[in-house]
Length: 383
Image (cartoon, rainbow, N blue to C red; front, top):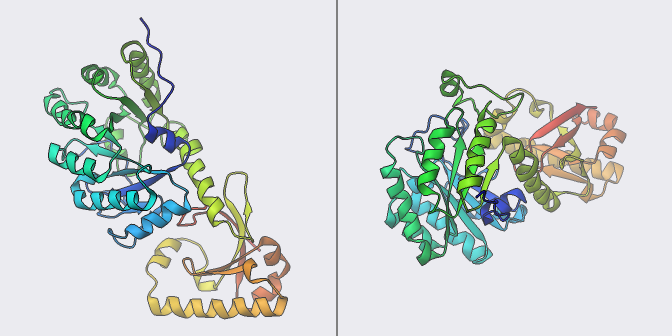
C-alpha cells in the first residue's frame, strides 16, 4: 500500500525554510573524507567559526555569534562543519550559551558525520540542550555495520533527551540503488530523512568530474542528482512512514537564504537605505580613491594595517562632518562605515552632491548589496 508523506517536516527544516535558523559553522575540520564535500576553500580544513556569513574574530567569540542571531531574528540554529564533534567542548559551550541567552525553546540541531560519534559525546551534547541530531553516515559503503552501530548510539538516547534523530545525505548520481539499500536498513529507526541535491564547488569539482559529473545548467547543482532523487523519494513514498524531504540547490537560495536575509534586513536597514525587490539594500557609498572596490578588494580590507586604517577612518570622519555642516545633512542620513572604510548615505544625496564630493576627494557609487555581515556588493555604478 502506497504511503502518503507526512506534511510536517522536522523543526530544523521548518526553521531553515522560513529563514529563522542561524547557520553556525563550528569548524572546517573533518576526518570522514567524503569525496563530494562541497565546502569552499575558505573553510575546508580550517579551524574557523562562522555565524551565517560572519567569520568570528576568534573561535570562542560566542558573543559575536549571538549578536548575529539577534540581528537575524533567529529562533534556532543549525550547527554544522566540518565536524562539530572534532571541537566538542567548543560546540557544547556554544549550545549552552545560546540556550542561556534565548531560552530553552531556542531550537538547536546539529549535523554530524559518524566518524567521531560515540555514546559519551552524544550524551554530552544532550545534556547541553541539543534538540535534534542529523547524521551523515558513509551510506555508500558495502559494509554498513559500523555506520549503523554509530547511529544506534543517537537512537538509544532519544528517550533520555527527547530529541529527534534523522539522516541528512546528498543524492549522488548513479548511486540511487545503493542509497536505497542503506535507507531500507534504517527506515524503521529514524524520525525523518532529508536529502540534498549534490552541489559542485571548486574543491570537490575535480573528484566529481573524474566520476563523470558536471554542473546542471548555470547552477552549483550537479546534473542527474535531482533525477536520482526522484527514484529515492519514490521508493520512500512506498516504504517509509516518516517525513521525508528533498532539498534542491535552488530551494536553498530562493527560500532558506533569501528568507533569512529579509529577516536580517529589517534589523539593519538605515534611514538612507531603500529595500530592493530582491531583498537587498540600495544605497550610496563614498570611497577614498585608495579604497575603491575592485579586484582583491576583500583581500585589501583584510590585510590593512591598523595605523593606515585608523588614518583613513579619521579622514573620512572629518569629511563626513564637513558634508553635514556645509549641506545640512541630517546625522541619520550619512554614516561612517568602519568595517568597509567608506561613508554611506542616500542615493539622492550622492547624486545631488556629486561635484562637491569629488572636490573633497571622494568617489561616489550607487550600490546594491546584501544585508549580510560581509555586505556583499551585487551591483555598483560610479556617478
